[in-house]
Amino acid sequence: MATTRSSGKIAFVVVRDGTGYLQVVLSKKEVPDAVWETFGALTQEASIAVTGSVRADARSPGGVELQGTALELIGPSTDFPITPKEHGIAYLFEHRHLWLRSKQQVAIARVRNEVIQAIRDFFYERRFTLVDTPILTGSIGEHAGTLFATEYFDLGKAYLAQTGQLYVEAAAAALGKVYCFGPTFRAEKSKTRRHLTEFWMVEPEVAWNDSDANMQLQEEFVSYVVGRCLERRKADLMELGRDLTPLARVTPPFHRISYTDAVEKLKTLGADIEWGRDLGGDDETLLAKQYDRPVFVFNYPKAVKAFYMKENPADPRTVLNNDCLAPEGYGEIIGGSQREDDYERLRARIQAEGLPEEAYSWYLDLRKYGTFVHAGFGLGVERTVAWICGVPHIREAIAFPRTLYRLWP
Ligand code: 4AD
Ligand code: MG
Image 1: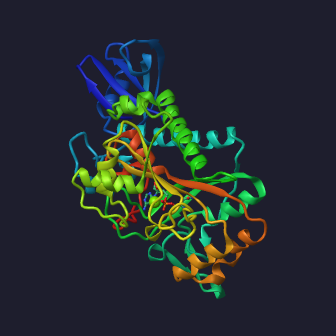
Image 2: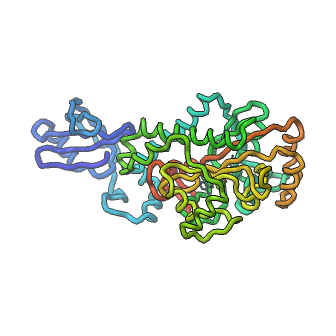
Image 3: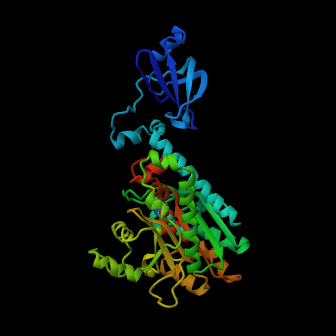
């Protein structure tokens, strides 16, 4: 039960069952005294059973209301900690298990559900095969500095997966178009509004796609996911006060700018950036604000990107990769690349990064036994949900966020 109010003769109770909200109307002179008394004792978030007859009412949410005849208190609720008054954000996260019941959090949960269903439908419709990749791994996927490690019997250290990518590359050789979708982990000591230590990532990998085809798949994919939310979750987006106009513009083609041009552009916009440095969160925000829909920044310097990205034959200082930046200040939602498919070059990169070659011998095998051009990307679910919902911080985009300072509830 969400709220109550009463005029003394007519009482209103708004109930919530997960499908929506329903207003129950009780009339003092038409219900037994006991029912009226039960109503009087109701408190915020008590659970109740109501009986009555449904009638159309255009003013009610959902278009119907229930004329109540009986009311039973099932689970009382005394001093519910989250009241309609404003609470600080730290307090709300301490009470996340209860805060989830509030209207806006319910709306975010529904949008997230739609995003995830749309992701699965997109790849299913396009005949990708889902391949689940391990969470406990023996090799580093992205950066050595951000690993959660645990002892693994007699085999030394196991790491929580930062990515499933290396494994879907193996699966792409078997199945052509594949994807993995699961939780990933980064021991990042970042306190930004874009970082979680545990987040969900979907990672497609496609045999014979080059970097251009990879970007084309990304723009079709992101447009599909946003389109589904507009089509099916409009009421939830309205509940969140989301301006739908910028979302409606999310259609292919997205803008494209090379890293080198982006650095020049950022300089003219007053950013403190030099060629060779990775774009920071502020740079991404500033750049993306110049565009009316997402933008791809492609071909970054090799030195700031992961070891597996393919060297750009036209400019070996750079790699054939791209980030996709969401508009309205949300920044990177996708990182993707064509993969280094040359055995010797990949081995040299692994050595240059100081990674243990034995741990990557199976990954190198993929270049030894019938190598092929392939590309893929990873989209972060929470960043995408935060952007679509228009909530400023990604910790609201997952039910129980894990961050540097939060492991509870
Ligand atoms: O750019 P990233 O690190 O790319 C990869 O992991 C590749 N292996 C993907 C691939 O090519 N298969 O991460 C991809 C996306 C980011 O764009 C971002 O949306 C999200 O994952 N992400 C995070 N989301 C929340 N918290 C974090 N700490 C994140 N780190 C990355
Ligand atoms: Mg990235």
